[in-house]
Amino acid sequence: MRSDVITKGASAAPNRSLLYALGYTKEELERPLIGVVCSYNEIVPGHMNLDKISEAVKAGIRAAGGTPVEFPAIAVCDGIAMGHVGMKYSLVTRDLIADSTEAMAMAHQFDGLVMIPNCDKNVPGLLMAAARVNVPTIFVSGGPMLAGTMNDGRRTCLSHMFEAVGSYYAGKLDEEGLEEYENNACPTCGSCSGMYTANSMNCLTEAIGMALRGNGTIPAVYSARLRLAKHAGMQIMELVKKDIRPRDIMTEAAFHNAETIDMALGCSTNTMLHLPAIAHECGIELSFDMANEISAKTPNLCHLAPAGDTYMEDLERAGGVYAVMTELVKAGLLDTSLMTCTGKTVAENLAGVVNRNPEIIRPIDNPYSKTGGIAVLKGNLAPDGCVVKQSAVAPEMMVHQGPARVFDCEDDAIQAIYAGKIVAGDVVVIRYEGPKGGPGMREMLNPTSAIAGMGLDKDVALITDGRFSGATRGASIGHVSPEAASGGPIGLVQEGDQIAIDIPNRSIQLLVSDEELAQRKAKWVCPEPRIKTGYLARYARLVSSADRGAVLE
Image 1 (cartoon, rainbow, N blue to C red):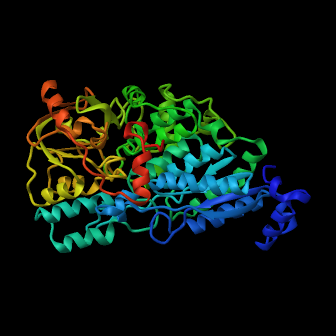
Image 2: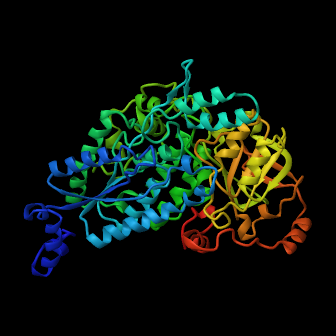
Image 3: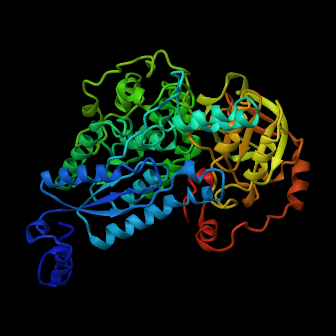
């Protein structure tokens, strides 16, 4: 076993003495040592239950003949970090999580790993670590939050809460109404209840083959989640026995499957950052162009919040991710020969699975749209591409042209929106918020929610080299590459310039002549970095562009 270097032979006697200091017995050290990476903390609602998940995982490991050894991983709550400097520290934790987990796993030579994440950067960070360490690994998340219920019986969620703030500033909602949302939007523990980034990534972890069925959809408060955790603990022992490793599962074909399922589910645009970053750790390069190729042939089958008024608990009752995959298999869109963490192929996993609710998961011959939930646009404003969740864009905004309203940071933009300075037809441009320029590539849920809450989501577009929460809806176009801080054309846009957006034709154009742009470029000077010390300064020096997944070079 891999752990023999710290448990077997005379040379490992000092190592064993320290393990005995932890209370482990000779008998426990003769079994496979399984690292249990638990992201429990008391600040993230999606992580407050992970101590219970960890205990269930450890019970499963012991039942199957292993010795569990728990250690922590950090996690940031994007909702709490939103709208202030804290959001600069969200995306960057993905790499901290990957690095620290790699360090712990390699230093202590575990025979296998069980990863217990739940929220946005925690899931991809641990998948990146799994690919690097490449010992048998399985994932089990903490599960999604249940939807909230308003006093009149309407269901609600976090995206409604953020939009309610915009309605309040627009005078459409009073303080009592705002407080009602505040008290009902997030009723339980778990990752927020729509197809936001956390749930998108937990579903895709299941889709790519690194988690058991139900990982992405069984609600956090259901006892089935604890049973899933116990089964994950048992299954890691099978993976260790058969020596099935992450890179045996996370192949190029598996990433293409994941992108296909992403398009069908209508996942967060953040998956276009995370899937390439995880693939990169596997030695695989995923391009923006591949996303469009897959989207072109993949129907969008689900409209979960914020695209629609259904939630993760509804997707679970309809059959979950596997039911979506079954619909895709009917059209020959998935490679079903691939190995998964069950020790079986995709085809074997899907045997007998049915779509239990064609209203929640549209049949393959009756989709919401014939193309996927995400589109990559290119043009002179974004030569290397930008991303939009087209399944959450109103039909009237799929093609739009309007004057640029230019802001060099999110804070200035949100003030202008709340002050009523943005009007129908405008194209809000927020720049110097990319991976390098931010630094940290903040999410723009506050301005997009303000626009929606004020009733302008069918009249105003927003373009940024930053990114969006999975809770964002409307013509919100992010990840503009190259970013402004790297000399990208978004840094050359001036107030009043006309911008033309054509989502069906995957085009985004700044309607300014090449000669004029060349003159502006000659005069452009990169602003001084906003942050010059600490982790963010180091991150800014090392991070790549968004179209490459914002990986560290």
